[in-house]
Length: 185
Image (cartoon, rainbow, N blue to C red; front, side, top):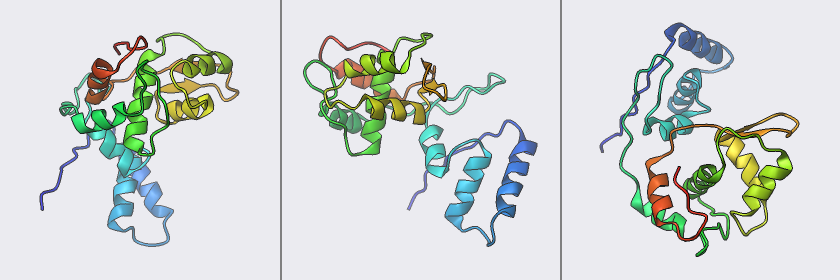
């Protein structure tokens, strides 16, 4: 069975080693293989191994300007399945159950949010309500923040789009997305 190799580049090896040491010291047992993958990923600045894996295939710009891994080709099957949750106007009809499709929907919303603009909670909610039909702007706001596509103040008074390199599927999704709300990222 072939294994996919996920390279990890660490900007500060000393900070990485300290973080890993501290995490292992808090354990009362020897970490399993999966626990070790999560510890290494957290020491590298990721939430867990799954977060690291999902980030490993995209191009990442490091502080010193070193380019990361080349982006893989777009997953056309994922895009085709995600397109099913959009109506002819390009609005999300229902929230998909699969996380990979949810993330692609969030990226499509991210592409429609004006960059470098501050929004109140009401303003971002109103904007998001124009892009979906299932009536849960709070879910979308929370998921955009959790995925790191937006940041917000603790009191919810300021929401801003964070600029990131989108996945290759976003461009394909936006090309195939019907309706007037279609916009390039």
